[in-house]
Length: 357
Image (cartoon, one colour):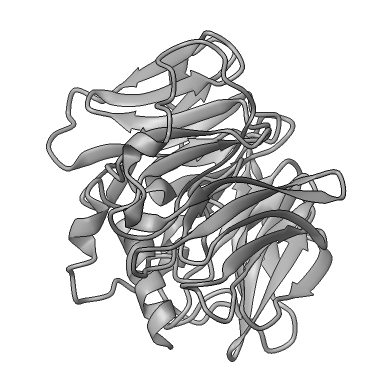
């Protein structure tokens, strides 16, 4: 495993905690945590330095249009307007920080405008999310979790459980493809044992009834939850994974000599609509496998060198193409062979639909 993957793996572990930076100081590695290639929040984390001078670009038709420059720690937070406290602002395209340390956290809209969310007070991957349609922005607060309608005047606030304490926080767990439902996981120092489902049309929060030892990893168009037995995060070499939906069980199988997890790779399961995606590892090679709801393999897409899995999008499955020089180059976000956005080479990114699963 190279240094970049080691940093990335530490970041993935940090996502289980309210204080992500604290975990980066932890030397040991937990085998059961999703690793570098999983990037399940549809988020890519790259540990790196500061002082970038790059543009975030967006695709408008067939033309890539530049939007305001980002210059790492050299750009003060005051260079960006703060997100208005209320009212519509526009469809979200991404939340990102241009570098790992000392950079502001920014909301990029589909029309190219950018708003300041915080002076890197919240690391985007792990706790910040955006609905698949770019309408809802979710962020943790001191008292729980807040979901802001970027296209309207509504804000839903989810209070922390009465049993919550210091070091506890909500994390986005899974979105429905229609952006109407979100499952939040409540964790305290890595222990996730409580889930809350939010209906975005009403703001009503309920507790899903789950079998013991299972976690929700997706929401099907029918409304049924896709459940995963957490014992399958045991770090063993695993060539098949079993999921449950309602009273039915389905088994997904890797191809050839590939595995879905082993001692060096964590298990990654993502659901978007009726599509189920897993990452398959064959030696140092990674492929994205897409299955239907019955467990039938629909497609297998090997990742090219320098590419890392992000997550499903309406266009297909998004990957990041890293530049040869992260300090001076740009990350290219691709989906279905189409360029969606470009970001600074060391940026941390959350795209619409990004959540833990």
